[in-house]
Image (tube, rainbow, N blue to C red; front, side, top):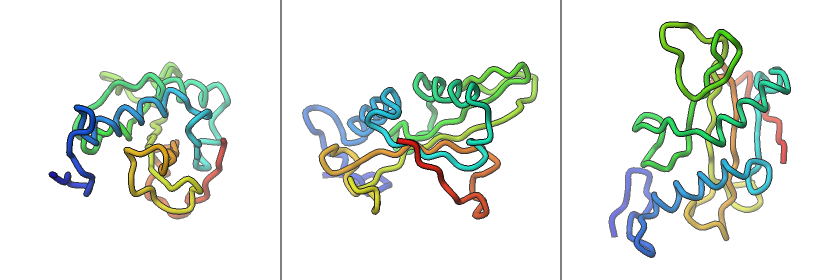
Amino acid sequence: MMVGSLGIPVWPIFGYTCYEIIAKLNDEARARIGLDTTIWHNHGFMQLSTQDQASIRACVVSYDSWNIGNSSESERDFGVVFQHSDGTWTSYAPDGEGWLNVVFWEISYHDLTLSRPGMTPWDTATTARILMLMLASEYDEPANAEVYCLV
């Protein structure tokens, strides 16, 4: 058995590595936002209009801008959504123009009570997924640590 950089086993299970299983489960979690996935928003995200929030969620569901910088161990658990100067939201940074807002999203793993980190993200019987949506400006700001939970 090999172990990846995050301590997750990388042995083949039914022909897939644990990372491939986790990526598939994360894709399914994004596709079923609010059904199988708990959503947490930071304060700044909640200040966006309802229409902007819906547009961002649509971008998260259809997200396909994967690269080594935003997907640890290819788990497809992090992404960035940009608001272009015309107000539209996409997962692609605007070329040659600025953007109005940037939103980070991240999937984290917890036990089924959501009280502790999930230690087996490839096992849906023991692990729940939480999708966190936050303005990029809120990232790493303790003052904005208050989280709003929407199930």
